[in-house]
Length: 332
Image 1 (cartoon, helix red, strand yellow):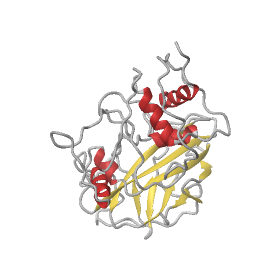
Image 2 (spheres, rainbow, N blue to C red):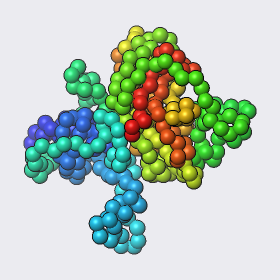
Image 3 (tube, rainbow, N blue to C red):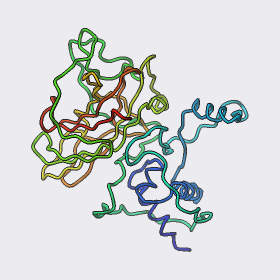
Image 4 (tube, rainbow, N blue to C red):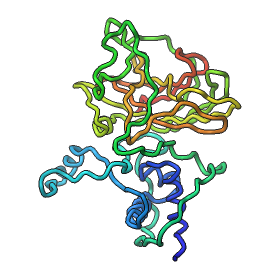
């Protein structure tokens, strides 16, 4: 039996660690060409491995792109496009900011067609990367079956706001910062540490433990990811996805979800808190980060379409303070 290709082994090990990941994120993590990663994964999926490679897109956006160059989109026989099996990874959305976004420069051509190298033995989990290899890919939970939702932290319904929660799957199914009068609640500005998308900022957690928080990317708008997950936006609303990673530098467990007090701040000073909606292609945060470990995930926000945003804010407590962190996103 031919020995497995070392590059394939490295690629499969990264896939095994995440369970589900976008091709561009794997390419960035492994410092490989995104097209080579896609080609290798497509080839490996035909060798009998329990591996599915798929795509996700905004159907109308793709049709419009084809129409703009004078090409009429072709439908599959029988009407409509074939749906790929569930569990496939999701491609990047069209507008990203941060180190995992945008196209990756390609140096040189492909290394040639990828050939299967025989059956592969089960992969043992790889140890965490040593310093200098860059941050690990966002932690993602392996799928538990077709269309299994990722666990989310239950949100508490304020007793005095009867319309805070809408029907599941709708844009109203989110927690808002609006009071009884229906308007946003302004609040005094904090005096936090500041940065931009891609900045890792130091602060302390709710129990005084030292932590580092990295704003990886902001996807605005993320309407197609929202609808692809089976949710519906109300007219005049848009969805935004924020990806952060928290590294616990202390000696005690950071015992809450890293995005528990994550907010979007509008230009007028009003805030938008995260929705309870979870996206299968952008897994949410899990509760708890052990000492020395990094926890990552995605937070979904639903807000009026015309809202202009100023920053993303993270705080260890419900109210902003000197340990809050702010990333400027006004130029996105």
